[in-house]
Amino acid sequence: MLQRFFKTDSDLGSLILRVVAGIVMFPHGAQKLLGWFGGYGFAGTMGYLTNVGIPTPIAFLVIIGESIGSIALIFGFFTRLSALGIGIIMIGAALVHAPNGFFINWAGTQQGEGYEYHILFIAISVVLFIKGGGKASVDSLIEEKLD
Image: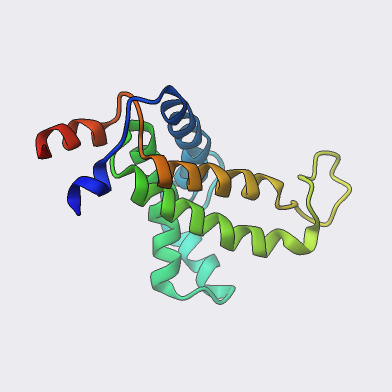
């Protein structure tokens, strides 16, 4: 079972997807956990998420999933778990943003942001969950040790 969790191949596509996804997600997680990039930090984000009705354990997992999960994706460590967590977070975010329509609010003419970004991230997460971390991942090193 543990071998299946870490199993991956040396696919360059998985490497590109996980590194880019991790880099793109990292600022969002750093906003929530550390207050970087104009974010509110851990306490502010927990306060906001719980005030809008998200249970405390789920709010905590959102913050950890986006911050630690993005770093794990970059290194290809626990790729499937990180991709699953981020994918689930993006499903929730897509549902929240659904009333704003599909498109990102490029022109500032919408009430809020659409859900197209979230759909892309869900698709990337599904691919990484299926394929694993690919080339140059910590998961591949762990897989070798388990053989």
